[in-house]
Image (tube, rainbow, N blue to C red; front, side):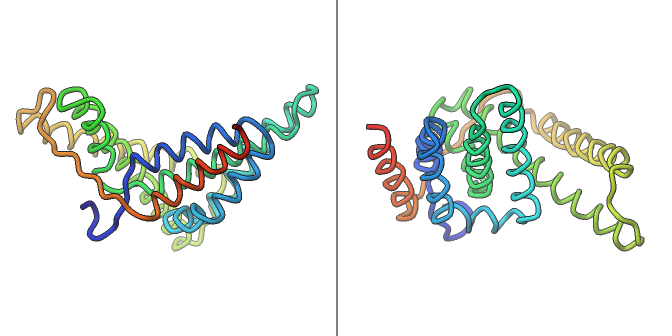
Length: 214
């Protein structure tokens, strides 16, 4: 069972994500229903790993931009609301990921060959994103210690630093894999832990899907 006693199944959460994404994109009422679902099931998980100072501004900006474009071009102004809900779902799903879940899922779907390679690449990618987030947080803390404020002028230097750190980590990982003789494929036993919350989330998503679309 991944990460101690946490019970969760990525297969159910992924199916829930697909259903809710389709539902939020079909109509404005669907997007409103999915937003309510996120408030009930996804908000706590989202803010447990992501600061509201990141989630709220990013969601609003990403949703507002297409709305403004469509407003001035005569399109659906409320299209941005659907995008906002999709962004919130993305934050929720990424925050719900547990170590090893992507490896288990890809091996379960594609087998020990392609599935192992794809799962390992996905795990490395998620790990890299978390490390970039932590590095950025430490950089901002360093700026505050120096009495400097974060500004657009600091973005190029910070971005360069994040890129260099990421490339160094990637180099270390590739060297370790090469020294251990890794070429392709491998053996991995997929582990899934069915939880009550996952069934509740999927059941509520299926209910909303049936009520609003069927």
